[in-house]
Image (cartoon, rainbow, N blue to C red; front, side, top):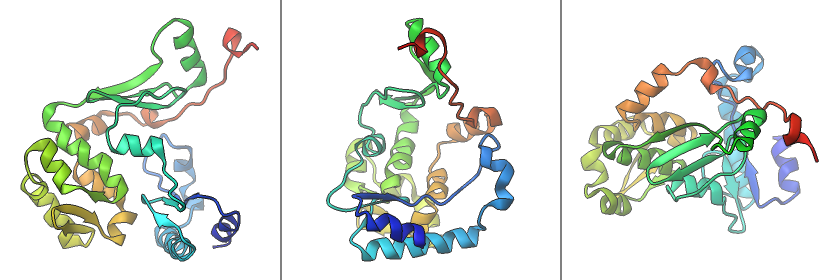
Length: 231
């Protein structure tokens, strides 16, 4: 509570409240989970922060982002809306033509690639046609609502028609539901946005996740050395 109050005292246009979630062995905090707040306590802390921020003029734009004075997060919004973009710098994400890719997170690997006139890409994926609707939902649900008319315009089918079982499950569990043609998350669904996203994963995404090793989740920052570090 004190941290949120202190942050708001500075009157920032944007506040990020990010509940700690450690799911992969490649994350350093994975080995220190016992020192982290319990899930119940984390939820109570989040709910108190949400109430305080809303009462001070902030709007929740995603699970963890709160903004006021029309503050817009161009990069995150572009990723969610599948807008073509090129990310510059280590660990940045780019998206174009149904292909998403991430640059090296390790600074030395990133610098070596540039010195060799190579693209500094660590990994990427080209979405097949049947993956596109799933990718659309997974990206856009970050902003807590899916525009049903836009979905139907893009894919020539309604949300419930294509994802009837998934929508019904959200309704049955209280995580979300239909508002006209739109799919909207409940407060519970917002907190569990990551779980909602997984519900809409294409089977190929599950296959890729199961085949990944813990080391692939590690973000190695590294250091610059040699010519790339000279000024």
